[in-house]
Length: 176
Image (tube, rainbow, N blue to C red; front, side, top):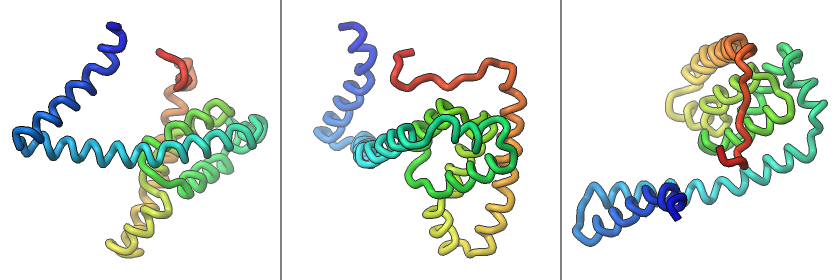
């Protein structure tokens, strides 16, 4: 019983706060509740698609292929695959983490995992097209030309820093 209170206590308090806010016309609480509901609906509609894609990725691509093309010895080829693969994704950043776990589980290098996360956060094709429309092609190309080497450098630095630290990504299905 106490475990459930600890796990769901904050959510329960937030729901009660939202209901009371509506009842007493507390503007901040109403806005917070609406924002939460909008994000919750977005997440609920997006997460099943991510899990289906992650399941297919896990089932269809053997570990040997991942190790060959994105593993520690993949070099520039692995870097390019990480950048390109991240560009063809869609959705918010939290959608990348199940994919990152599969990449890790299948043998992708730390470097390529961090490159994937960085590029996922700022170089997705839908995001680039919107950015080009608002800020122009020149801005988009300059920003991409700056961010790609930056994320590659971060990937190499994280790989160097974490290689002797017994780095691992926790299984999301286990309770830690």
